[in-house]
Image (cartoon, rainbow, N blue to C red; front, side):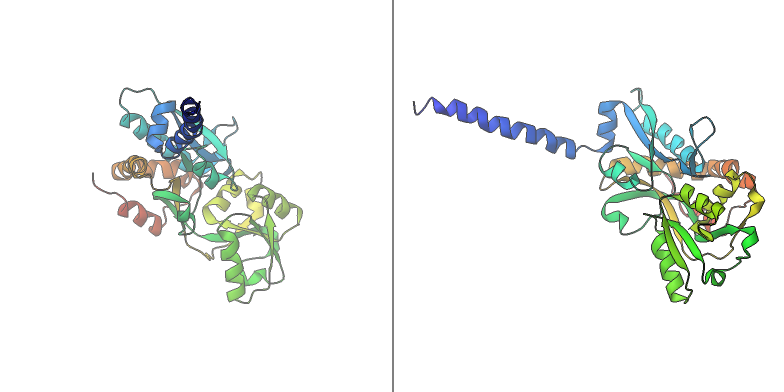
Length: 291
């Protein structure tokens, strides 16, 4: 009886160890291995960050960042050669864009996410894809022309964005007694602005340009020239996944070297009359990394 209990005990041990081993293997699986196993490259996009990432009238992902990620998708497919890889777009929000990457729901997030050191505690970023800064949008009739004009006003800002802390710090440092109103997203912020719930909406300049583009009456808005932050954008990828990040960066650098980035910029942004800012031109030049 003493020896006959050993096989049962061994089975119990195996039943505990094997599932755990499978989970461990999945956790250590790199993004390229995941793509090879599933045959899918999952691209996260934002629906509210025009002209960088949004849904067009047909409900399809569109914009500057989306086009760059289509080039990356081509690079991923080239990496696997003859293997059939399907690129799929997955809608994400400001709140879940980071967790969607860390949880494996998407392989890359292509929107308007600022590269920050605190975010790099959880995820990594591609080469920079855009450079902008935060500013304020108001109704043209409000007379708001500078940050000092915000004194005594209500300023909306989308939650879970880097603009929240930057706006609060700027107001505090410059003794501007504006009231900061946290809104769910930029869409809600525009609704508040149009209805008089807030006097101005703070966000990244390029995103506010997108809001004006989409407006029924663009001339009713005024975009402040003042910039109160530095916002370098990049695509979010899993942390410590060098092989996949190399495929992403190789694709982006190839786009920059070939000059395709200019076509993409003017397709989505330049058509509004906005020229390539010197700092963005420098970003493109600095990231034309040779093969």
